[in-house]
Image (cartoon, rainbow, N blue to C red):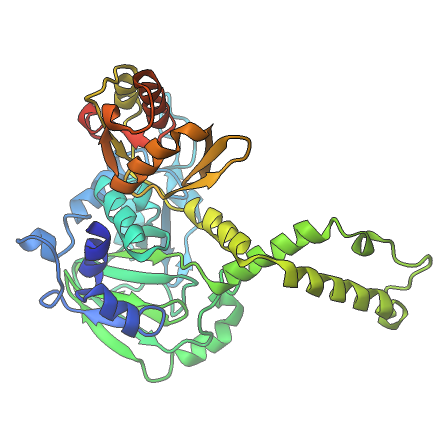
Length: 423
């Protein structure tokens, strides 16, 4: 049901997920005003995204949390400020010199610099939950940064990102200008600064969106769309949720990696080039190169798409963080399991069962794989199907074996005991 509702995606777009997928996803920008957004709950906090982050939380992170680079960047006049200007030692017992100095941040911010908090999907509890839910809603990994800009200041010059973004305005007003891409669907290796002249020229043309975002407004930008933003008459803060889209190029890379692995077993491709080869004369080795290309094409034709999909799956699942766990509480719960203990599959942990050979099965869970005896298949299948079972209800096993399986699932981080306490 949660997958069908896609609550985080609805909150970012104010649209039915099917409409967003058909009309906007990876196609064109979407500006959603707060009064139209489908935000859950009532009250100003929900409508302005301040339940996710507010200015007081920014001060908390900068002043009290022992923040270190690269979880903070600072920019001024379109350029990144050297980290040495705002980092220092944390004092006795915390001498590492890359810790954020709140005093230095204050001076830079007062002088018009933009503060960028990075990786908040790993630091700030409300955003950990929100980013994880949005990743589940989209099927693509996410990250969260926050941009805090002084009044009447611009943080970065016009540029594009190599991932899709959702911009969520938290506080103040920010004027956004969006232009058509100079390169559609750029890959991660195709950064905007490699096309700086084209970007600068395109930013002089008529924008596709020219709007001031108010608290609670949201903006979706497919990768490649040029954008810049300027704070107006007060401190402005917005969240940028980056979506690391799984692309066809990722499948192409996986296919080529597979070819490289398989083709290495081909003796025709492992042979040496002729003695005295002149690499400056391509014609002298044209026959060898033609044979190599033909061999690679032959191997490419043998690839099973299922194997390519499995490699893409492994790379993607490794980037998606499942529900956080409480190690101490779960360890104690695992030691005290009984038949009435509820076992719950860890939320947002993507799992699948595979044959493991020689009376074994493999449980692929996120970035890790776990080997089990084949006789636990009915129990694992049942847990994966319903998501939550009492230990005593795991089918196909003797009581002692149920407990053994449940304990391993908990200690391996595949399942949790909900009653053991929150993460």
